[in-house]
Length: 118
Length: 112
Image 1 (cartoon, each protein chain N blue to C red):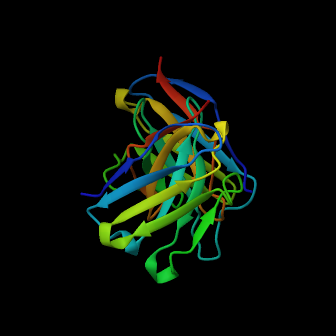
Image 2 (cartoon, each protein chain N blue to C red):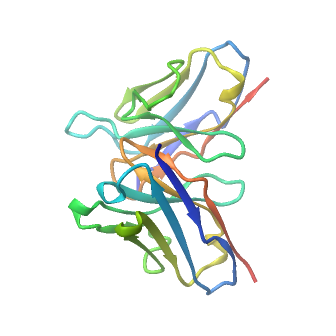
């Protein structure tokens, strides 16, 4: 069974940093493109960025709103995906989902809440 | 960026009756390979989104056949042939033709 489990969310002050983790099971992470999608409280879905698969050199691409502040990385030995978030702003407050990008975005984690507030 | 526009914003439905949601994109989602890069998701209350339809008309694994997707280019439709109570939630369309991926604003389906 494909499963994605995010962790690492919490309360952080504006300008701070946080690292989210996504543990994948039931499939080989390196074979797949992986996305991060976020959802501010009570609002819609926003794409954050993606990491291509191993065959495509794990190239990363980001939404303009997070470019230069967020970084996606992987650890194949742990079958895990990460989202390093720096220079956080109040508008980054959201539930962050780790998503497998295969035939559409076909598998989603349960999400982890990031709250940026002083 | 490709802008995705859904209608209606809210859709009250009667169990057993059909329902339909529209999604329009600001640019054609039809690739030269013949695929439409349009997906549909359902987010039930308190849950993560789940994929219903990919490539415009293909049901994802485990999705009941009462859900169907149609359309091409810039106009797409999600249809539920007979609504069930478990179908309540917010439906989103999303394009994966180009980056950034973009979502519609969502359609909230609720039982009358």
